[in-house]
Amino acid sequence: MPGFNICGTGNGPAANLETRRKHRWVFRTLGSVNPAALLVLQSASRPNFKFAEPEMHHDQEVAYFAGKQTWEPVSMKWYDVEQNPDVSDTIYQWLRTVVDLPTATVYAPSVYKQQATLEMVGAAGNTTETWIMCNAWPKEVNWGDLDYTATDIVTIEATLRYDRAIKG
Image (tube, rainbow, N blue to C red; front, side):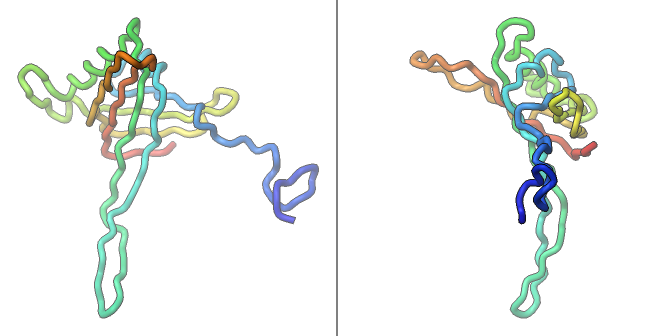
């Protein structure tokens, strides 16, 4: 009978398998971002991969092929801590590694493209999955809106762009 294998009966997986959980992860490195700021990340996404689909038309058919590959940006959301680390300032300084904002001068990629590392963590705290994002940089930053009628915690959202991800 299909289903979980409980007490040696059943043809499915063991009922005591541990699954990865959405709340067990940590960014170990994120370019020049202060490591203390990584501890107040509220959420992040793992890398997404996709192929472009070149088409070949012939008579009444269309055949598809794997084309150029793309790694989609990673979204991140921080709680905006005022004390150490000042998350707003940390993200602003990270953005300044890409562009000198007063003069609107974008630096060379060799200056701002850095490595980012995301790890999934198991129940015992051991690393169960590692993503290394090569040549990462902040593509977009949103300090969010403000509202006198709200009591919500302020968050900052950033989009991390990278050239390639390697799963370890």
